[in-house]
Length: 190
Image (cartoon, rainbow, N blue to C red; front, top):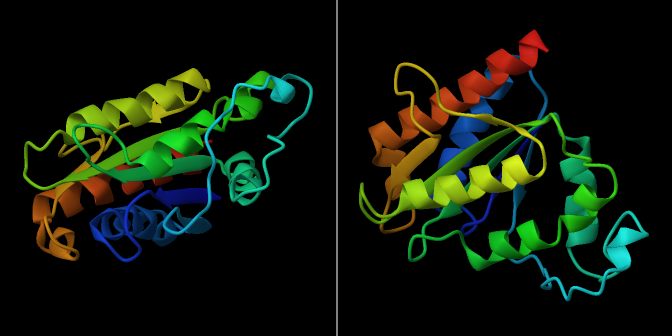
């Protein structure tokens, strides 16, 4: 299963690009699942250390839904809006709270990961966001996948100032689709 996660507004630009990548995976015959972080309750890591001895964080929030999806996925495509050259706070909280997956046997190891970022302008800090997401993949021992030829960048990078703008960004859509195609191609080879 290919999991697509959008850390932006429901129905917004990030979701548009994540769904474009997932559509390419579906076209290749792969099972996909979409998860929006919009409206999810996610607390911060409180560094209590309890996850050293239990498989999941004790906090009663949306991470109880998110952890199993991450574990079930064969590949994870994560998209975030660009906020001051950083990922959204929701996504940063998810990243913090995946420590139990790492501490308890690197449960995401060897899964593929692809990153997507959306900013208000073509050079709006998206590459920083993509690198933050790719760093998270690396820390979990995942296989980092780029968008491959013919665009061959770090992942999907789009633009959009107002909701829906990304659907008109042909360059951004192409990089997101190429990311989905690359993950599908590698998934079929596995």
